[in-house]
Amino acid sequence: MIITQQKPLEEILKMLEPFSKVFIIGCGTCSTVCQTGGEEQVEQMAETLKKEGKEVTGSVVVEAPCDARLLRRDTRKMKKAIEESEALLCMTCGAGVQDIVQHLKKISVPALNTKFLGQIERIGEFYERCRACGECILYETGGICPIVRCPKGMMNGPCGGMFEGKCEVGGYQRDCAWVLIYNRLKELGMLDLYKSYKPPRDNSQLNIQPREIVLVKTRR
Image 1 (cartoon, rainbow, N blue to C red):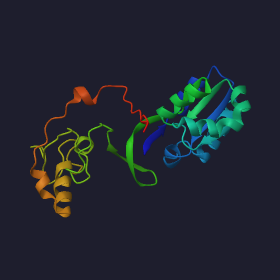
Image 2 (image 1 turned 120 degrees about the vertical axis):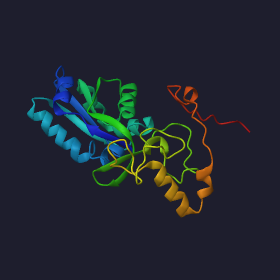
Image 3 (image 1 turned 120 degrees about the horizontal axis):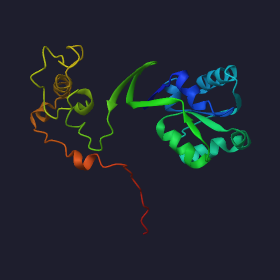
């Protein structure tokens, strides 16, 4: 899940200052779950903008704005309202904003900050669990990612800063990732994996950007 957080209203209004007519686009997946761009939040934003003197030409919550196919499908009936607007207010993640600009060809204003790939513990509680690093070692670590869960990103641990199962970073308030990994592997009967040495990551290759995957169908 891509975790987002709404920008301060002052920042949004400043970006919208040159425009009097605005169309709002929300997200039916991640932003809806995060309560930053679902039906309710889009309606609230429309009311707020109207009170600020803006004309809202319309709104739509696209199932997944980062998917060009769904974006085109869900905005097709709103074409006139979109064309009448001077700018689009995007209550989506950064990938959604970029897809909207590319395919709808309108000035697009991001209403949200994209924070991280996260796990949803319960409504309103989101925790970073994946760095999308491109080199997954979760099998070896019992499904707990040390790159994210360990503030030092250590590939082998725990370090000398661990005390009574807690991490020194942040004043021993959080659990040490490598203690969690040890306990999980022990629980799963896979403790032998804990003893295996994990070499340093080759960040020169992992961090080449922008990343892409293109699946090419081969002819038979």
